[in-house]
Amino acid sequence: MESMFFQRRMTRRVMVGPVAIGGGEPVRLQSMTSTPTHDIEATAGQIRRLVEAGCELVRVAVPEPRDTAALPELIRQSPVPIVADVHFHYQRALEAVAAGVHKIRLNPGNIQDRKQIERVIHACRDAGIPIRIGVNEGSVVERREATARADELRWLMADRRGALIDLMVRKLEEYIRLFEANGFYDLVLAAKSHDAAVVIEAYRALGKRFDFPLHLGVTHAGPPETGRIRSVAALGTLLAEGIGDTIRISYAADPVEEVLDGKELLCSLGLRPRNEPELIACPTCGRIEVDLVDLVGRVRAKLAEIKAPLKVAVMGCAVNGPGECEGADVAIFAGRGKGMIYVRGERKRVVNEAEMLDALLEECRGLIAKSR
Ligand code: SF4
Image 1: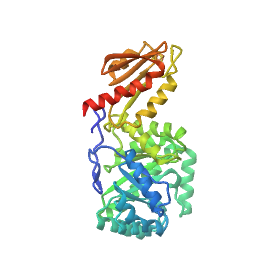
Image 2: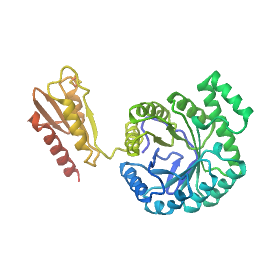
Image 3: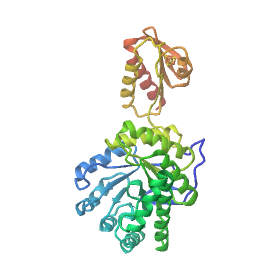
């Protein structure tokens, strides 16, 4: 589904198994498992939970041979394409390709030498699978060559954000040249930082310079409480500018939370159709006459069990209540211990405060049943 409001940046199109990225395709939602990949039961279980939440591509870390050895079974059990996340050991990438993985994520900066990177490029080219080359703030500075490292650190000291963005774009450009010199163009690019402002400027720069699809993310964003704001600030800004072909919101938490928040971000921007209820609730103020915060929490928990694109409003008084209630599929407008239920803009009935939740849910179910 294309957003009605945002003109998407046109890119090349890359296939990850059956899932297309870029080239005007919908923005794809990704996440990464947090279980040891070689624990097949736990990882396959987490992949299933991620997919149920709306994830379209799942990345798994493959630090050891036993992790790449688990890939064939994970791929067999996964309903969505699997991406192998490779750092340091190019052999893991080769093993992952041989295992049938759908895409490799590689940071060429932390692989020993050019020949090793070229072996991975050739293996992916022969297998017809794409590579995401990602640079991260944490690993973008040169580690092997002392003079280059000293220069880069000096630039960063002088103007951290500006120099960091230049460095990330320059490194990606060097890597892209290497890939192109080897006849490889199925690339997705990423340049991540924990700093939302750096992420925004870095991706704007990538979007201007290259026509490869971009994978957006804020890295090391912390727990949802901090990561949510950073991620939405950066990814929301970029997506509203039409930049970004896949996203991952990353938290130090259950990755299902990443997917739920990423999905809400895409739905909020009109970049993904909503297949689940959308809750509109007043923020409450001194006019409130019922325990609306408690009611909203209980409605939200119950709506999570409903799989239909209903717009549900829970409003606290006459200021905006009637307007929001009339625009929703099912709504309640509460005051003085009573609630007026609306269905598709029509006043339906008045219920007591204790009956509000049940009455609202009853109307939601009734409306779903009618539309089937
Ligand atoms: S709908 Fe009424 S109670 Fe709720 S925040 Fe607005 S003015 Fe306050």
